[in-house]
Image (cartoon, rainbow, N blue to C red):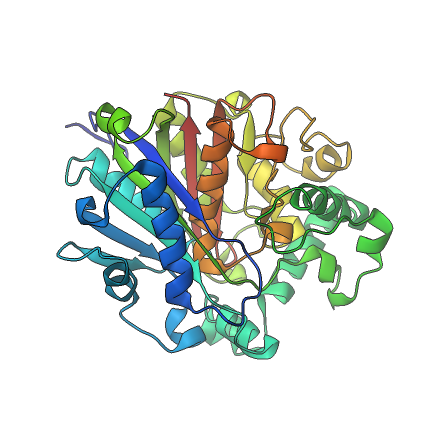
Length: 398
């Protein structure tokens, strides 16, 4: 095994495949608890791969704030044992909104390194049982507590500052932000699993209730409940579980400062750029090769910055590129055909794995009304906080 770069990339690791996927609907479910959501997604995933719980060799859970939202700690074995996955390592990963993206990264690493053959990765969050002010307080704990949060900052406020700076530097407009929302709502309206299946217009988006200038309610992702799961296996064994394996061509995670004040330029997320560079190098592809993507649109400005940081467009061109319709399903680079966090919903700990499920379903040709014409090479980008964690995964047909 040869070490490359800063100890982050290893060659001669075995190829890995997604052999099962499972999701719950995203939404507000007052009669559901965290465990039932996670178990539903997990069971759907195992059924999809024709695997029994006692065949799973490790269980990785992505969850941001279960203890704060529902009062339960020790969540990984709490969920795993409920579905019969026992006598194996069960570990929870927390990386803010990138919690299950990080869980997937570590699960992929373990299978690629030969530690396990079957690893179940689950992301889950139960948020709607708390009032909105409490949700905002819990979410804010993913930011810089001593600096930004004690000064009264929330994530809408932080991303509003990011949006204002992007507008100042590159001429991005509110209409271009609204174009992200309009596109993702149109996509989500076709997604039976989406939280908000509602088509909107640019005029509605611009006239939405103000949240943090220049962001309106239509620029902000939803408070949601939900879960998603994927099963990983060595590619050489994939045919034992499915006739439609999806190869994990690359997965990379990087980190950065939590506080905006510590960043040189708040209109870009270095953790995403670095993770993308590593992933492209690992997969042997370029940004131009990616046919479609699910990116982290926690706020509309985040999608614009994501397509810039991922190299789909040059810096400052994300707004016009979106407004021209080039990220629509019929465009040259479809982005968030699932509806994204904006319309599909954002149960924080579930988002990263849900993105991977959606990319995998596209590659398998099982995306239903959302199915794209070109769907052999897709990318998922998961963001934690205001850019402190970035996870980029590239999936392709085997």
